[in-house]
Amino acid sequence: MKQENSQWPRRKFITTGLQVGGLAVVAASPVNVFGNKAIEATAYTVGQISDMIFKETGFKGIANTVDTIKAGSSDMKVTGIVTTMFPTIKVIHKAIELKANLLIVHEPTFYSGNIEEKKWAKSSEVIDRKTKLLNDNNITIWRAHDSWHTIKPDGITNGVIKKIGWENYYKGEKTFTIPSASLKQLVKYLKQKMDIEHVRIVGDKDDKISKVSLLPGAWGGVEQMNAIINDKPDVLIVGEVSEWETAEYVRDARALGDNISLIILGHAMSEEPGMQWIAEWLQPKLPGLPITHIVSGNPLKWV
Ligand SMILES: [Zn+2]
Image 1 (spheres, rainbow, N blue to C red):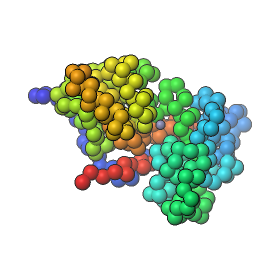
Image 2: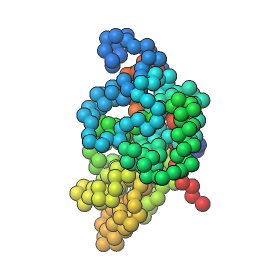
Image 3: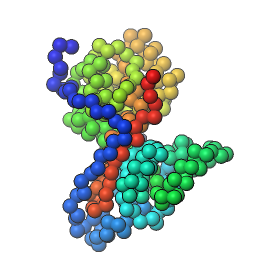
Image 4: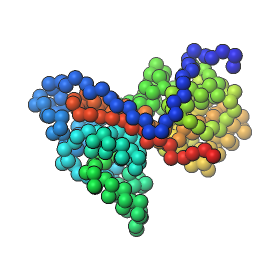
Protein backbone atom coordinates (compact mmCIF):
# COMPACT_ATOMS: atom_id res chain seq x y z
CA MET A 1 0.00 0.00 0.00
CA LYS A 2 1.70 3.17 -1.19
CA GLN A 3 -0.57 5.71 0.39
CA GLU A 4 -2.37 5.73 3.64
CA ASN A 5 -6.07 5.59 2.91
CA SER A 6 -7.72 8.61 4.51
CA GLN A 7 -10.43 6.33 5.90
CA TRP A 8 -7.77 4.62 7.96
CA PRO A 9 -5.88 7.47 9.59
CA ARG A 10 -2.75 6.97 11.58
CA ARG A 11 -3.09 7.36 15.27
CA LYS A 12 -0.40 7.20 17.86
CA PHE A 13 -0.49 3.89 19.62
CA ILE A 14 -1.18 4.24 23.32
CA THR A 15 0.12 1.56 25.61
CA THR A 16 -2.51 0.65 28.11
CA GLY A 17 -1.71 -0.40 31.59
CA LEU A 18 -4.60 0.72 33.66
CA GLN A 19 -6.31 3.51 31.82
CA VAL A 20 -8.60 5.74 33.74
CA GLY A 21 -11.00 7.79 31.74
CA GLY A 22 -12.70 10.19 34.09
CA LEU A 23 -15.84 11.87 32.90
CA ALA A 24 -16.56 15.50 33.41
CA VAL A 25 -19.43 15.93 35.79
CA VAL A 26 -22.33 17.22 33.76
CA ALA A 27 -24.01 20.37 35.03
CA ALA A 28 -26.65 19.28 37.50
CA SER A 29 -30.12 19.22 36.02
CA PRO A 30 -33.04 20.08 38.30
CA VAL A 31 -34.93 17.09 36.92
CA ASN A 32 -33.24 13.73 36.90
CA VAL A 33 -34.34 10.32 35.71
CA PHE A 34 -35.93 9.56 39.06
CA GLY A 35 -38.60 12.19 38.51
CA ASN A 36 -39.13 15.81 39.38
CA LYS A 37 -37.89 15.47 42.90
CA ALA A 38 -34.15 15.83 42.54
CA ILE A 39 -32.29 13.32 44.68
CA GLU A 40 -29.02 14.41 46.21
CA ALA A 41 -26.19 12.74 44.30
CA THR A 42 -24.97 11.01 47.43
CA ALA A 43 -28.42 9.61 48.13
CA TYR A 44 -28.68 7.23 45.19
CA THR A 45 -28.79 3.62 46.27
CA VAL A 46 -27.46 0.72 44.21
CA GLY A 47 -31.03 -0.55 43.83
CA GLN A 48 -32.28 2.78 42.49
CA ILE A 49 -29.47 2.87 39.96
CA SER A 50 -29.92 -0.73 38.78
CA ASP A 51 -33.72 -0.24 38.53
CA MET A 52 -33.14 2.91 36.51
CA ILE A 53 -30.77 1.03 34.16
CA PHE A 54 -33.36 -1.70 33.63
CA LYS A 55 -36.01 0.92 32.87
CA GLU A 56 -33.85 3.06 30.60
CA THR A 57 -32.49 0.09 28.62
CA GLY A 58 -35.96 -1.38 28.16
CA PHE A 59 -34.82 -4.56 29.90
CA LYS A 60 -37.88 -6.40 31.18
CA GLY A 61 -35.83 -9.07 32.89
CA ILE A 62 -35.30 -12.63 31.78
CA ALA A 63 -35.30 -15.81 33.81
CA ASN A 64 -31.95 -16.25 35.46
CA THR A 65 -30.60 -12.90 34.34
CA VAL A 66 -26.99 -12.44 35.39
CA ASP A 67 -27.60 -8.72 36.01
CA THR A 68 -27.53 -9.10 39.77
CA ILE A 69 -25.41 -8.02 42.71
CA LYS A 70 -22.22 -10.08 43.07
CA ALA A 71 -20.95 -8.38 46.24
CA GLY A 72 -22.34 -5.77 48.60
CA SER A 73 -25.99 -4.75 48.79
CA SER A 74 -28.74 -2.97 46.89
CA ASP A 75 -29.51 -0.45 49.65
CA MET A 76 -25.94 0.85 49.83
CA LYS A 77 -25.64 4.61 49.22
CA VAL A 78 -23.42 5.18 46.20
CA THR A 79 -20.47 7.56 46.53
CA GLY A 80 -19.13 7.00 43.03
CA ILE A 81 -19.32 4.52 40.18
CA VAL A 82 -16.61 2.72 38.26
CA THR A 83 -17.55 0.93 35.05
CA THR A 84 -15.34 -1.79 33.61
CA MET A 85 -15.37 -5.13 31.78
CA PHE A 86 -13.90 -7.28 34.55
CA PRO A 87 -13.66 -6.23 38.22
CA THR A 88 -10.05 -7.33 38.53
CA ILE A 89 -8.12 -6.88 41.78
CA LYS A 90 -6.33 -3.96 40.13
CA VAL A 91 -9.60 -2.31 39.10
CA ILE A 92 -11.03 -2.77 42.62
CA HIS A 93 -7.96 -1.09 44.14
CA LYS A 94 -8.32 1.79 41.70
CA ALA A 95 -12.02 2.15 42.60
CA ILE A 96 -11.11 2.28 46.31
CA GLU A 97 -8.58 5.04 45.53
CA LEU A 98 -11.30 6.96 43.69
CA LYS A 99 -13.70 6.47 46.64
CA ALA A 100 -16.16 4.82 44.27
CA ASN A 101 -18.13 2.10 46.03
CA LEU A 102 -20.22 0.77 43.11
CA LEU A 103 -18.61 -1.20 40.30
CA ILE A 104 -20.82 -1.72 37.27
CA VAL A 105 -19.21 -4.59 35.40
CA HIS A 106 -20.02 -6.49 32.23
CA GLU A 107 -18.47 -9.84 33.04
CA PRO A 108 -18.24 -12.13 36.08
CA THR A 109 -16.43 -11.23 39.26
CA PHE A 110 -15.80 -14.85 40.21
CA TYR A 111 -14.98 -16.52 36.89
CA SER A 112 -18.35 -18.15 36.19
CA GLY A 113 -21.37 -17.16 34.13
CA ASN A 114 -23.70 -18.81 36.65
CA ILE A 115 -25.85 -16.31 38.59
CA GLU A 116 -24.23 -17.66 41.71
CA GLU A 117 -20.72 -17.07 40.51
CA LYS A 118 -18.93 -18.72 43.43
CA LYS A 119 -20.81 -22.00 43.24
CA TRP A 120 -18.36 -23.75 40.92
CA ALA A 121 -15.54 -23.97 43.48
CA LYS A 122 -15.71 -25.97 46.70
CA SER A 123 -13.12 -23.63 48.10
CA SER A 124 -10.79 -21.06 46.61
CA GLU A 125 -8.45 -18.71 48.38
CA VAL A 126 -8.58 -16.37 45.42
CA ILE A 127 -12.36 -16.09 45.72
CA ASP A 128 -12.15 -15.72 49.52
CA ARG A 129 -9.50 -13.03 49.37
CA LYS A 130 -11.27 -11.11 46.61
CA THR A 131 -14.50 -11.26 48.63
CA LYS A 132 -12.67 -9.97 51.71
CA LEU A 133 -11.17 -7.09 49.75
CA LEU A 134 -14.65 -6.11 48.57
CA ASN A 135 -16.26 -6.51 52.00
CA ASP A 136 -13.48 -4.67 53.86
CA ASN A 137 -13.94 -1.69 51.58
CA ASN A 138 -17.75 -1.79 51.34
CA ILE A 139 -17.75 -2.23 47.58
CA THR A 140 -20.86 -3.35 45.74
CA ILE A 141 -20.53 -5.05 42.35
CA TRP A 142 -23.51 -5.09 40.01
CA ARG A 143 -23.36 -6.77 36.63
CA ALA A 144 -24.73 -4.93 33.58
CA HIS A 145 -24.71 -7.65 30.95
CA ASP A 146 -28.17 -8.69 29.76
CA SER A 147 -29.64 -5.20 30.15
CA TRP A 148 -26.78 -3.49 28.35
CA HIS A 149 -27.07 -5.93 25.43
CA THR A 150 -30.86 -5.34 25.38
CA ILE A 151 -30.80 -1.59 24.79
CA LYS A 152 -31.22 -0.65 21.11
CA PRO A 153 -28.73 -0.46 19.57
CA ASP A 154 -26.80 -2.98 21.66
CA GLY A 155 -24.87 -0.98 24.30
CA ILE A 156 -21.65 -2.88 23.87
CA THR A 157 -21.57 -2.88 20.06
CA ASN A 158 -22.63 0.77 20.00
CA GLY A 159 -19.74 1.64 22.32
CA VAL A 160 -17.32 -0.16 19.99
CA ILE A 161 -18.81 1.65 16.97
CA LYS A 162 -18.34 5.02 18.68
CA LYS A 163 -14.80 4.15 19.69
CA ILE A 164 -13.77 3.18 16.16
CA GLY A 165 -15.74 5.93 14.43
CA TRP A 166 -18.01 3.71 12.32
CA GLU A 167 -21.28 5.51 13.16
CA ASN A 168 -21.90 6.22 9.48
CA TYR A 169 -21.73 2.53 8.52
CA TYR A 170 -23.43 0.81 11.45
CA LYS A 171 -27.21 0.48 11.13
CA GLY A 172 -27.88 -1.51 14.30
CA GLU A 173 -27.23 -4.88 12.62
CA LYS A 174 -24.15 -6.98 13.27
CA THR A 175 -23.21 -7.00 9.56
CA PHE A 176 -22.55 -3.82 7.59
CA THR A 177 -20.31 -2.34 4.92
CA ILE A 178 -17.27 -0.15 5.56
CA PRO A 179 -14.94 1.60 3.09
CA SER A 180 -12.84 -1.01 1.29
CA ALA A 181 -9.57 -1.90 2.99
CA SER A 182 -7.06 -4.71 3.17
CA LEU A 183 -7.13 -7.02 6.16
CA LYS A 184 -3.78 -5.55 7.19
CA GLN A 185 -5.18 -2.00 7.14
CA LEU A 186 -8.27 -3.02 9.04
CA VAL A 187 -6.25 -4.82 11.73
CA LYS A 188 -3.97 -1.82 12.14
CA TYR A 189 -6.95 0.52 12.39
CA LEU A 190 -8.75 -1.58 15.01
CA LYS A 191 -5.58 -1.99 17.09
CA GLN A 192 -4.98 1.76 17.09
CA LYS A 193 -8.56 2.83 17.70
CA MET A 194 -9.22 0.24 20.41
CA ASP A 195 -5.77 0.40 22.03
CA ILE A 196 -5.16 -3.30 21.50
CA GLU A 197 -1.58 -4.48 21.38
CA HIS A 198 -2.08 -7.78 19.55
CA VAL A 199 -4.93 -9.46 17.74
CA ARG A 200 -5.08 -12.93 16.21
CA ILE A 201 -6.29 -13.48 12.67
CA VAL A 202 -7.18 -16.21 10.24
CA GLY A 203 -6.50 -14.74 6.80
CA ASP A 204 -3.90 -13.00 4.63
CA LYS A 205 -2.83 -9.40 5.00
CA ASP A 206 -3.92 -8.56 1.43
CA ASP A 207 -7.46 -9.94 1.79
CA LYS A 208 -9.95 -7.32 0.59
CA ILE A 209 -12.47 -6.30 3.22
CA SER A 210 -15.66 -4.35 2.80
CA LYS A 211 -18.46 -6.28 4.48
CA VAL A 212 -17.85 -6.89 8.19
CA SER A 213 -19.71 -8.81 10.86
CA LEU A 214 -18.96 -7.37 14.29
CA LEU A 215 -19.58 -9.63 17.28
CA PRO A 216 -17.57 -8.32 20.24
CA GLY A 217 -17.29 -10.63 23.24
CA ALA A 218 -17.86 -14.36 23.28
CA TRP A 219 -21.01 -15.24 21.33
CA GLY A 220 -19.97 -18.84 20.88
CA GLY A 221 -19.11 -20.83 17.79
CA VAL A 222 -22.68 -21.47 16.63
CA GLU A 223 -23.63 -17.78 16.61
CA GLN A 224 -20.32 -16.78 15.03
CA MET A 225 -20.36 -19.45 12.30
CA ASN A 226 -24.01 -18.73 11.49
CA ALA A 227 -23.15 -15.05 11.07
CA ILE A 228 -20.68 -16.13 8.39
CA ILE A 229 -23.19 -18.50 6.76
CA ASN A 230 -26.15 -16.09 6.79
CA ASP A 231 -24.50 -12.70 6.23
CA LYS A 232 -21.50 -13.73 4.10
CA PRO A 233 -19.13 -11.05 5.45
CA ASP A 234 -15.56 -10.63 4.19
CA VAL A 235 -14.41 -10.62 7.80
CA LEU A 236 -15.82 -11.68 11.13
CA ILE A 237 -14.56 -9.58 14.05
CA VAL A 238 -14.99 -11.23 17.45
CA GLY A 239 -13.77 -11.01 21.02
CA GLU A 240 -12.88 -14.63 21.48
CA VAL A 241 -13.44 -18.04 19.91
CA SER A 242 -13.14 -21.63 20.90
CA GLU A 243 -10.20 -22.42 18.65
CA TRP A 244 -11.73 -25.72 17.53
CA GLU A 245 -14.94 -24.11 16.29
CA THR A 246 -14.95 -20.76 14.45
CA ALA A 247 -11.19 -20.66 13.74
CA GLU A 248 -11.30 -24.11 12.10
CA TYR A 249 -14.48 -23.24 10.19
CA VAL A 250 -12.82 -20.14 8.72
CA ARG A 251 -9.66 -22.09 7.91
CA ASP A 252 -11.68 -24.64 5.93
CA ALA A 253 -13.91 -22.04 4.27
CA ARG A 254 -10.80 -20.23 3.02
CA ALA A 255 -9.21 -23.46 1.79
CA LEU A 256 -12.42 -24.07 -0.20
CA GLY A 257 -12.11 -20.64 -1.82
CA ASP A 258 -14.36 -18.39 0.30
CA ASN A 259 -13.36 -14.78 0.94
CA ILE A 260 -13.67 -14.85 4.72
CA SER A 261 -11.19 -13.73 7.35
CA LEU A 262 -11.37 -13.74 11.13
CA ILE A 263 -10.07 -11.14 13.57
CA ILE A 264 -9.94 -12.11 17.26
CA LEU A 265 -9.60 -8.97 19.38
CA GLY A 266 -9.57 -10.62 22.83
CA HIS A 267 -12.70 -10.74 24.98
CA ALA A 268 -12.02 -7.93 27.45
CA MET A 269 -10.65 -5.44 24.94
CA SER A 270 -13.36 -6.20 22.37
CA GLU A 271 -16.20 -5.13 24.70
CA GLU A 272 -14.43 -2.53 26.85
CA PRO A 273 -15.63 0.42 24.71
CA GLY A 274 -19.17 -0.67 25.60
CA MET A 275 -18.41 -0.13 29.28
CA GLN A 276 -16.86 3.24 28.47
CA TRP A 277 -20.12 4.09 26.69
CA ILE A 278 -22.24 3.02 29.69
CA ALA A 279 -20.32 5.52 31.83
CA GLU A 280 -21.00 8.31 29.33
CA TRP A 281 -24.64 7.20 29.02
CA LEU A 282 -25.12 7.11 32.81
CA GLN A 283 -23.50 10.43 33.69
CA PRO A 284 -26.32 12.77 32.59
CA LYS A 285 -28.83 10.42 34.24
CA LEU A 286 -27.01 10.65 37.58
CA PRO A 287 -26.00 14.29 37.81
CA GLY A 288 -23.36 15.05 40.39
CA LEU A 289 -22.27 11.46 40.91
CA PRO A 290 -18.66 10.80 39.85
CA ILE A 291 -18.60 8.06 37.19
CA THR A 292 -15.28 6.74 35.93
CA HIS A 293 -14.51 4.12 33.32
CA ILE A 294 -11.48 1.93 33.97
CA VAL A 295 -10.02 -0.38 31.33
CA SER A 296 -9.56 -3.81 32.88
CA GLY A 297 -7.15 -4.81 30.08
CA ASN A 298 -6.18 -8.12 28.56
CA PRO A 299 -5.08 -10.82 31.03
CA LEU A 300 -3.00 -12.54 28.32
CA LYS A 301 0.53 -11.62 27.26
CA TRP A 302 2.39 -12.62 24.10
CA VAL A 303 5.82 -14.13 24.68
ZN1 LIG B 1 -21.11 -8.82 26.26
